Image (tube, rainbow, N blue to C red):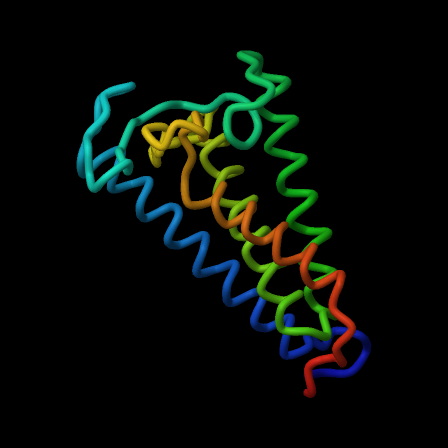
Length: 167
């Protein structure tokens, strides 16, 4: 750690490492879906039980909410995701609990992963389909999963009364 406020806590380093891992996994799997499998749009491939791969382009927010086909929305959502990731990164630098670091890392990695898709393609590549379960009709991706799990963990962390992670 260095002087002048440029230090990063151990939980912050965990957050940044996890964000990088989520981003790498998200982009690698999306590349495999798009270019390796070359999965046709809306074609479902059964994998195991209720799990299917179904390629869809999401022009809205997570899980297809707020669909819009306009460049202003595309770039607005991209900018918003990157601003959120930057704000969370600033928070992560000072995070004092492992669970908070994990939650921030998951959200940052997921937000940047989906922002990259939106900038490159104008939409987010979604492909994980568990709609056969009957209660979850949305198709999603690794970044969406990371964001959702990160938010849940952040909420759980907010209820904890434990002490900060030791340096």
